[in-house]
Image (tube, rainbow, N blue to C red; front, side, top):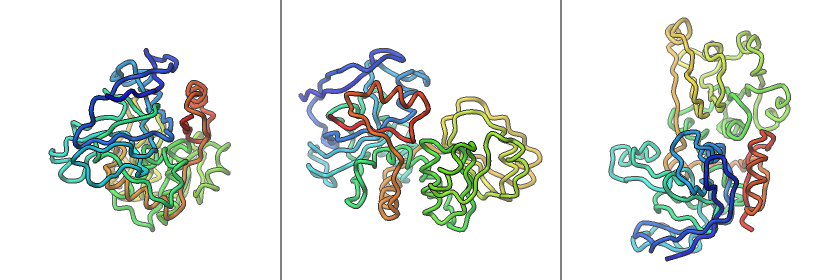
Length: 336
């Protein structure tokens, strides 16, 4: 048995309190991670607030974990004590379904969420199935890497899954925790990049890799732009005039959703979808193999999120900062 010291909420929309729980003996395919830092994601807020009606309390959030392996199960061969590793949204997979066997672990129907039915990374230790844990490249700044394990892979995975060409024209809707990373990855991928964002963020968007900007709050600007895109990635969770966005796509273009939009999308088949043979799709995070590729790509191109840091003991202050909408652009909790 091992005692874990953590921060938990005891009820929906509650404040964080110190919390302890016991871990049983480690499983043969599991690893324990000595947490160094953990990013805060909007999904953590959704879980704390039970927005998705799947939360269990007490709840220890945190699924952007960076730390060192402290224990390994008997059957774990690819990780060793002392390895610096990361853990994202998933803490385990069934490993035998068609999705897992084909490398789409993130689509496994029995995948275990790091903060769903188990406790996450706002703690000194977190446990996970070894297959879900990835090594952090030595050339990547581990102190800033946590948000890549959720936000980074969420925007990177479509580039790989859709076999995106470096000559493609890519639009990114929303320059926040996800969108600013999408700009950086798309620019490094070689694409022509356009940010759909507010006027107040246009300069920042250009600094982070956009070649052009469109005012996302001006529907006339979207409808009348001369720019045309092979791919538009939406990172927002609020409604937009999606038909206007479809009008910016090239023939065979795709609108791809990675933001957790909970409201129905109002989209007409005519004229754009049908006559330009457009595609609408979405994807959640990514499998371990793509996470590894993403981390290597980020290390090679020196891609890192824009972050603010708080001590883990100040988790309530950090959460309020994220809720305010003023954070630029991801928040990381550093273990005290």
